[in-house]
Image: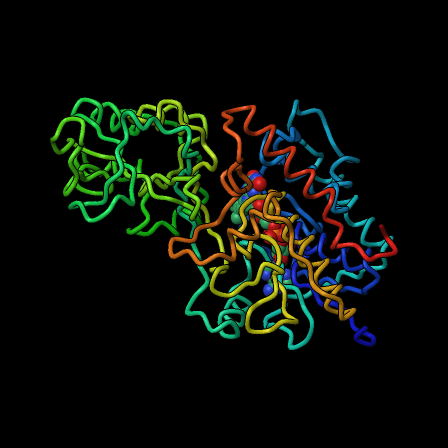
Length: 437
Ligand SMILES: Cc1cc2nc3c(=O)[nH]c(=O)nc-3n(C[C@H](O)[C@H](O)[C@H](O)COP(=O)(O)OP(=O)(O)OC[C@H]3O[C@@H](n4cnc5c(N)ncnc54)[C@H](O)[C@@H]3O)c2cc1C
């Protein structure tokens, strides 16, 4: 055991609080440093710990749903914030919806009970001793500079223009065809559109319902990442000459170049997930489903991640992080939460749990733990730390875990994947100390 060590945790958001509580659970002292309420972010409104910045829903609790499965695994691994959600839950159907003020108060009281101090100060420099950086997607600029300097990366990614991702087995391969432009490979799937289909899609894009933008988000819009609906607004043909251009592509079914295409690019090495290239969007989720299912080949698309746009500070995980959530440059420096490249409340809590457990183990000179790849948690960690030039933030989804040996589709596939994940998590006690089992 490193003598008298306290783990310094920057940010008392979802990940930071979970990490601190895991340290305490594992017998190691932790201190949180939180800049609010003195210094606010663009999205937070209070000085509360674990403030939910937007929705008060933490999504599904059904294990057959990726977010539900992640929660079930976190339950097995002893997640404290999940317990706080249960105590502050309000009716919301199958979704885990909480009273946000009571949830923050519950987390505060868990911190108090564990003797964890929350120091109200903005940290501008990465500490030179054991620490967890959990400062989130709205990390203050000076801290972000200090982190990039230390990690030796040119920049953090400052803006998220996220395109939707669909499950590979929900793409109709009788319509889509595999080809790269000018016949130099088959890396992309291409959904071909006729002039009529293209016009209909563009018209719908012009009419569709959008998420309203906050001021700071409008300032963040920049040319290379314009949302697809914004491109449509610039002119009827803009998309046909932009992300939907068909040049160098021939549809093998017609032997002709289509009028336009939507290209789908593999999102993981296994090829279970594909993203819609250039289709970053602010459309409401229901609209994304409706419109993007109009694309030939995607009429039954299962959306694993919806498109979104907001300011986001995140690391290029594959370059700088290990699956233990240690930084590659400094084994005593951990990263947690959305900063790691995961996306979403529960995913951020999950990354806090991993960093907290491992920082505590580091402190006690114990082996650090990794999580089984069959689990949603293991799949997420693998995704954010596996080399990937096109790396973008990722939420929980079934494309992250290895494919099943047996053939199954839809609900049955998800049920089997969930069963396998929970069995793996149940058997995986490596995160516990022998005496806790
Ligand atoms: C505008 C917006 C809306 C979102 N809406 C949703 C949603 O509805 N559902 C969903 O699942 N996900 C949503 N997310 C994504 C994400 O899940 C949340 O941002 C989540 O809170 C991330 O958890 P975190 O612990 O990594 O960061 P946070 O919860 O943001 O915690 C980070 C903490 O660090 C503090 N901090 C930052 N810099 C410093 C510093 N230098 N010194 C000290 N403290 C510092 C911040 O004040 C903050 O309290 C949203 C993100 C954004 C930006």
